[in-house]
Length: 315
Image (cartoon, rainbow, N blue to C red; front, side, top):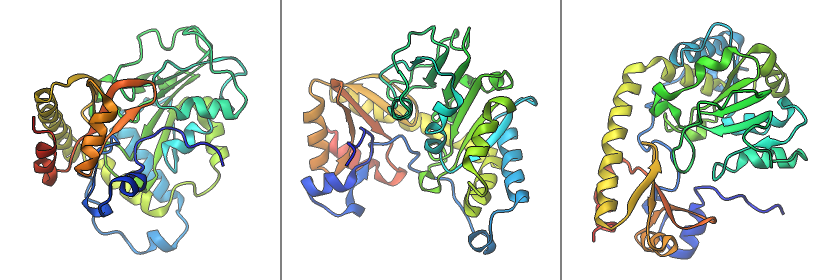
């Protein structure tokens, strides 16, 4: 069996070690908005009929408006950003790939599985940036696109800071921006993602995904959510306040915030393993990293669960 790559989640393993029922755990190991978009009722045929082109066209139109996609760029919808990441090697020239680390490890895994070298320097012709980066929140450099044949900008966490988006560059051939619906809207189980780029660059992705790549419920919910800009504005404001609140709690424990976004916060602590174990005994799941003894990452709790977090983090 292939080795599981390091990710957030893994609640079943934590329960096996520390006990408790799944419903009584707080999973703060991911960067998923804990207050998801309110889905509302759906028409019955979204579950029973094959998704039609009208529903897909409505989703694409909503995505173009929400992200201010330039006229010269195309939008490809997929069953999650991960499905698109897995297809990136097929879009790239046969040259070494540059992926600045540490970062989300599925990008390197996709190229390595395709037998590609992931050891290029910053001037490589193929470059992958997570923007803002997971786990430290750093942004891609201004020179990210200079002299490249293909640049993939993974903006899975960028909807909390739309002013930083590089979506305006997607009309240029060789630039792909990836968007994940699961993070900001808090609906990771919906499995919806987007690739945005010049038609010549992303066209093969649409062909590779085949017909009916996105389910009927995902088309309907995605369209509704992308049109709801008041919800997005209110959510960004709430996430900003909640991130500041979590920073304050961690600072009282002697932790220093060293990065992140308003969906997840990265802290420097004396002993990350010990800190994670302490939280796990309180049935709160956090994220640590195999490459750092001192980094711990926390997502934000649901509005109703701050009291538990405050008790667990009390000095």
